[in-house]
Amino acid sequence: MEEEELLYNIRSGSESAFTYLVNLYRDMVYSLCVNMLGDHTIAKDVSQEIFIKIFKAINRFEGNSSLRTWIYGISYNKCLDELKKRKRFTKFKELFSYKVTSQSYQKHTFENTIVVNAMESLRPEDKALLTFYYLEEMNLEEISEIVAISENTLKTRLFRARKKLRAILEKQYPNELKDMIYG
Image (cartoon, rainbow, N blue to C red; front, side, top):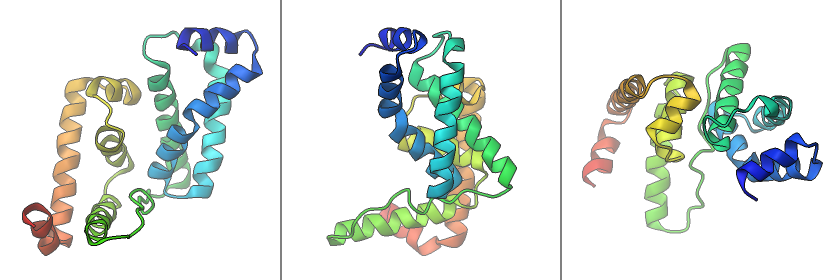
């Protein structure tokens, strides 16, 4: 179903169209919530709240960005609100969960665990930017729309977040980092 048709059907009161939207974006929303909030139960609750907010705000969506970007923006802001409310940092423990079936997977899992642990020391906003850019592979334009900052500011914040992450990795895992880069 095309985006315009989907929006028209939802705005016309079609429950099946909204269910289609939820099914289309629920994994994306839930994944972002888990990544930012670090707790599956909280992420599930917040995801539901996000879709309620989307349902209530769908008539205000003007189409200045893609529906996906708009939903990411709502999700990002709701997660930040939740973090502020709970005054806690995110955990990325589940972010890179792979089954260990071979030596290469073991190395991959080990390296990802190191990165995940280091990311716990970052601010939620920095973790979100790194998640959008590297894990979700979003472009700068999409991310800047979601977090409501200019692309130049975004580039600076991404640079600083990477620099902070690298400093944490160098301090906490100097030998492992060397192996990851040169190994």
